[in-house]
Length: 232
Image 1 (tube, one colour):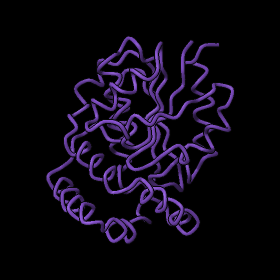
Image 2: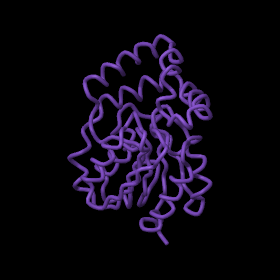
Image 3: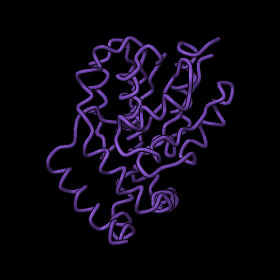
Image 4: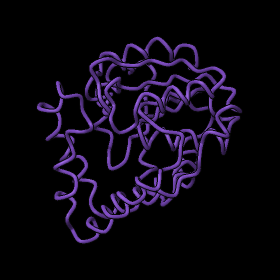
């Protein structure tokens, strides 16, 4: 039986998938915590593959999409479909590495709130930030300094996923918020252009946190696509 596994982003947990767990209940989605138990993107992907046997449909948001792409590279025969939400196949730029490295130093000093709180609204479209930013901040801070450090280091060290995308033989659904400032739409367009069986959906009036901001649009896109890749 094909399993649907949802992969949270950096410092996130199952709560960011709450609306999808309900809307997609017919497929009995599971939420992975592999990203909390490994130090690199490839190791997270390997944990994910160990945790769930058989064919998988992976739905990953942001860093979760990086883990999903790594799993497809490590075990292509096991991946029946990929849904990639607000993610990036490129490695970090030198500028982003410098920003993350500076943030890691502050996380290690116990100053996570000082780093994250001023920037949390950047994850959302301005229409949604007032209602959602505080809850998202608590999710991220709740992950704790150790996870923030480990996961940022994993993202810094991730390989360029683009060379493997053209080899994918499974269908892919690529979603991105039209106003995503963290992984802009051109990154999703690039992924969709490289994957042979990709469908691109740009979600209007939406930033980076698609599953929280526009659950209606995300659920509709997934519900339309999943019958193509899940067991009937």
